[in-house]
Each structure stands twice: as C-alpha cells, then as structure tokens.
Image 1 (spheres, helix red, strand yellow):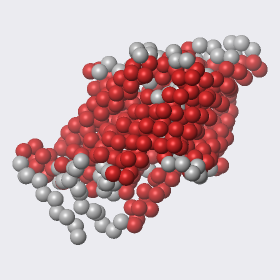
Image 2 (tube, rainbow, N blue to C red):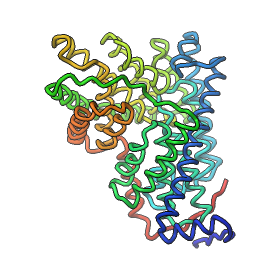
Image 3 (tube, rainbow, N blue to C red):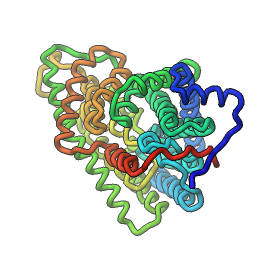
Length: 460
C-alpha cells in the first residue's frame, strides 16, 4: 500500500516546490543552481578526505598524488598497502550490504533513468567511505565516480525533502550529477553533455538548460572560490599541416580497435574475481595484492594516473617506457575494477588513450622526417578523446571534454575526426559501451514499473 508522505507546508520549501511542480523555468533554474553549489561542495569534501588519507599513509603531503606517495614507500609497503586498503574497503561494503537497508537506486544513472530519482543516503556514504580506502591505498581507479554519486545523492535528498514527484526529482538528481562531473574534470560543457548524451540518451532544451546552469555554478565554485586547477595541464596543441589529419584518422582507427578489447578485458577480470570462492573483502584484498605486486615493478600504476599523463604531455618518454606503463596500468585497472573496488574507469580510459596516442606519435616520428609532424603530446591529447569516444559511445561529449581541457581550437579538427572514427569502429565491433549494462538494466526496470512511485522522505 502506497505511503503518503507529508511535510510541513511552509517556508522556502513550499514556495520552491509549488513552482517546480508548475514547471516554472525560473524556479527550476534556481534549483539547478543550488544543486550545482551542493555538488561542488560534495566533491571538495571528498577530495579533502582523500588528501588527508594520503597524508596519513605517507606521513606527509605528496605533491604529485598517489604516484608520488608510492615512490616514497619501500617495496614491501607498496606491496601490502593496496591489499590492506582493499580488505578494509571490502569489509565496509559487506557490512553495508548486510546491515543497511537498500533504499533507492544503487547509482546515479539508475536514479535518473529508472524513474524515481531516489538515492539512499547510508548506502552512498558507505560506498564513498569504501572508495576512500580503496583509492587512498593505491587502487587503479578514478575518484570521480564517488564524487558524482555524492553530488547526486545530495540533490536526491533535497528533492525528497521537497516531496517532488519522480519526473522533477530525476531532473534534480541529473543536475547534481552534472555538478559532480564538472567539478571533477573542470569541464562545464562536457559535464552537462555527459548526462544528456549518455544517461538521457538525447539532447533536449528542457533538460539541457538546468544542467548547464548547474554546471556553470559548480565550475565557478571549484575554480574561482576554491582555486582548483585543471585536471591535466595541456601543452599548446601542435597541428603542423592539414595533411596530418590523415594521421589522426589512423589514431581514431586504432582507438576504435583497442577500446572493445579494453572493455572486454575488464569484463573478463570481473568474471574471474566473481568466480573466486571468497567473500567480498577477500576478493578486494586479492585485487589489492595484484596492484601492489605491479607497483613493486613500477609505482606509477597507483591511483588515477593524472601525474603520469601530465608527465607524458610535457616530457619525451621512450616508447619502451610508454608501452610498459600502458601494460602495467591496464593490468592494475583490471585488478581494481574486477575485484569490486568502488571507483570509475573514466580516468583510466583517458590514461590508456594518452599512452596509445603517445606510442602512435612516437612511431610516426620514427617513420617521417623531423618537423613534418606534430609533437607526441598532440597525439596523446587526441588519443585520450578518441579512446573515450570509443568506450562511452558519446563522441560529442568526448570532443568537448578534451577541448575544455586544452582550451585550444587547433585540437578540434583532428579531435573530431579521431573521436568519430573511434566511435564508429568500436560500435561495429562491440555494440555495448562501458555504461551499456547499467543503462540497459535501468531501461528494462523502467518498462517494468507501471506508473510513478511515490517519493520517499529522506532517511538515514
């Protein structure tokens, strides 16, 4: 029997709710701006917690992130720390699954696409805490996924406090997720398009306008007030001649061929860890052991790889070094993702794309005379966008993501060609994107739900 939830009809909550229910655009824009502020602050808190964890484990501040922390540890510490962190993170997830009631969607994509827009508070906090231990101990995953989830959860709580119906609540959660993506990557346009192109599956003004407002507010908070810098410090893009566009066409082809194999490898890793006869905490500890063993060989496999990509963009790497870190990082990412660590593969995808582009550019420079080609860093930049488009199947978002990271118009022509080529080739080989399973199950769930469920009040 459906429960009727009532709140005190007074104050700003009643005012805002009445206007949102009337599809009042100014009120919707104001709500989107508030979600942008809350989402940005959520990502800031998560980053600071990770920073404190890094200081706690390393005994001091590591200026270049997890890779710097790993290099400051002895080999046996690098070997054991990811395993210990994985065991703690897995134990948190196990306890949350047993003792905390599951309320609402498991992730923000499900909350937006299924139809209710409800994200559980306790489950989200538990998963975020688990991710802090995983990422803080060296897991090769991105920190942006938990950031976006936290931002979306705050929006869900706000909408549930206002007792908004599912259609309006989903939009509010989408605004929060957009704010989280924008704050994580410092890419306001791509942040709004990520939700529109991937989650909604269409770009419409009714949803895009509030998403843009939320994105703008979140970007202002993180960049101006909190002084967060860009994720990648891109060198000026070097485009020598128009004929070189064919080289970038070849890079898009390579990305389109490599992306399905990368995703398939992650699926194989998930299946292999899922068949282990161990509880979750032990499986995640095994994944940590694998990362720790790889970090003994090369500490650069720790973390999301931001510092390593920045190094590739600004210094000349030998192709052997690029190939080695590409192989080790892929193995470490598969171990972390496969074992069940809470985090994203968005940033590791950028890492793999940068390494592929750097290898491709180095090979071209060995074949053609000096001065006739762009710098290797230019191919690394385009490689990031091409592989991103080939795994997410969102070429427009990928193009704008890299453009916002470089702030260079010269990157657009080769980037557009490489991203579209990578997307077309990858889609022909593998119909499912990296988010396909989640979105497909969500769409099936949406069809199974008849009508719109009532909105639950926020609860611990």
